[in-house]
Length: 103
Image (tube, rainbow, N blue to C red; front, side, top):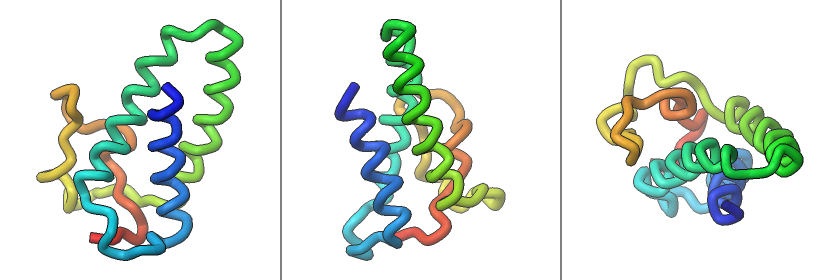
């Protein structure tokens, strides 16, 4: 679970720094990071109530930062590439794109 959280946090930090190394973050990495966020949500159910509360607070802060650094993908620009590994239709964060993206 720590790796999933780290992936999500790393994505948010990259977005906040305007992708310090443009071109070094392929869209496939973005997909993996969105998948990691989905897996975090699923994994929350396996935690104790105390651990869930603590992680929920951290995730809420990261999620808010992600929302700040992204915009709704209303035109579906990224839709052809953004497909959750779960096979579900894109939802939530999958329907947003970075305000400034490196690809």
